[in-house]
Picture 1 (cartoon, helix red, strand yellow):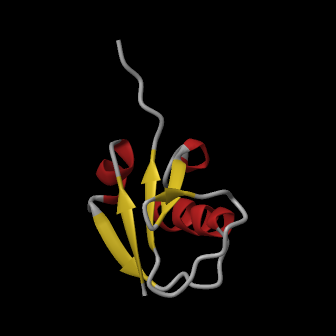
Picture 2: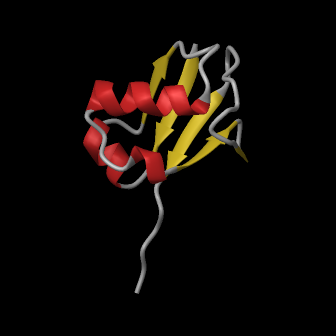
Picture 3: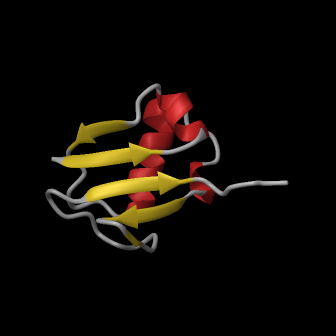
Length: 77
């Protein structure tokens, strides 16, 4: 089982700060595609991804027990 953390507008879109789902064996890119479809998430492809608190590339494979966080770009002013 994997814990998925959402921040900013992604948290609002999902309606939860985190979810638990089994994504082991999928790449980060596949996880993004799955979550975008499952939760109708916009702009998930621009979000940074961290696996176990370290930034991860699109081709990193998720392992059982990994924690995955999606952090959208921040705009300021």
